[in-house]
Length: 618
Image 1 (cartoon, one colour):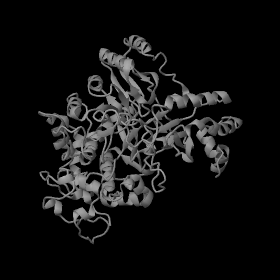
Image 2 (image 1 turned 45 degrees about the horizontal axis):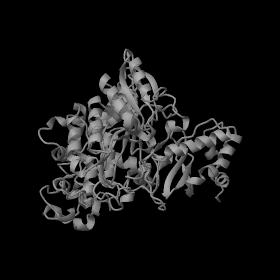
Image 3 (image 1 turned 135 degrees about the horizontal axis):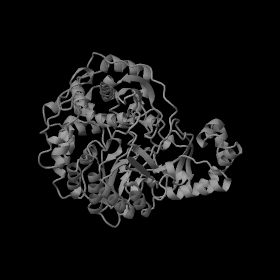
């Protein structure tokens, strides 16, 4: 039986030891809401709910014990507070290289923003630059979900940092946690085709799926004074949100009508794009939308894909990366209701007992798209779903170099290795942004666009960028152009080995090998320090996934346009054997004329032949 734990009410004034023991009549209520069938079996909440679910239920909508611990002088938060902190956009980290030398500074916070479509206004960027220098480690990092994150913030400065971000019209709410994450969209500020509609839809979805009670607790906790102006969605979004109180979409909680008092089973990711533009890795999302417009640019509807996700765990075959299924085409007037319905279905049917199976991709895998579509229509969504509209072949767009935004305006895409912004480049970009009041947009490839550059400003901006090393921003090294990596060591607690810090060296080695073999075609490379998939390695043509100290799983077979899942061929490849392992396979690729992409060549060869070329048995 699947119970709707999301419908339980929580006494916001209740304070519990370790966030686990119930102290109110409401929290001692019995489990009686059952979705799969009319019969209900009653049992206590403490018996029925997992530790993670109880922690959310007893928090008073993500307040306690986090709010209390913000006031103490401890150098770190308790585990219960840490899990709530994620919903507020921050992870507590232990700097693994400072553990033995500085017991205080080794505890620090990573802070992530919510920037729908990657948009960062000039004033917000200036504030982030100041905050990273004053309270962080001096760097900003563009993430693979088009948002900035900051590292090295002490616990005692966290409220100041988040409060400053809020007063500069930014937000960290829902950047992490069991909730809808940052909504992605093509960052290019083109004023043509479906691009404006896709950007607008991403902003609207971010408002639509924002948690109601958590929004209040977030603002109350991090900023003093009046903040009623903070959440004012468009009228169409507000009208759609009122329907969260009705039908199967309603969680049973008046405070959180869509999410319920236990929110979602795990994180949830949504992305919007335009036909043919796969700059946002569409098939890796819980919900992927492809927006279609009419001749005037008005939104007509969207193709909808569901159930993608990258996270997995080594040596656990029941965890895996998965690409999304086709759900159908929905008209514009029904998009908001469909999104709320899909989230409500995952809220009610997602696995709340085994957390590693809680993502919607496992629900789709286990129950199938036919069941998913049928359940959606029967219990959650009254609108019409049609067969998907034809789309052009998808392409990984990166927007690097100079592009005409519209008449009289330009934008320029700047390559940023692993998204890390620091030192003279960070200082110089801040000066350019403030001088010309430019808008920044971040890409899913961890690059950065400078937008709204007037035609009269273009020459001056070009000159300033050249001083920072961006003479030819549209022509980075081929391997580096689309390569991405996760932060890994030393700050990520899940990292098994290196990723970001050694990616430049790995790319240099691969480039030298390709040149040695006379291959002039590039390969899409991604690298992570663990199997959790933060850099979406399982869509790459060649991926290195940390599996031990200086050892990596070798994944091959993704495609340059991010449409096919890669597969693991080696479980623990020592990094110093990278060239000797890959050379026979690359020679075979060259012998076949390099007519296909490397990933397509791997798939055409078949797994057995690839294993033989790698020197392993099938």
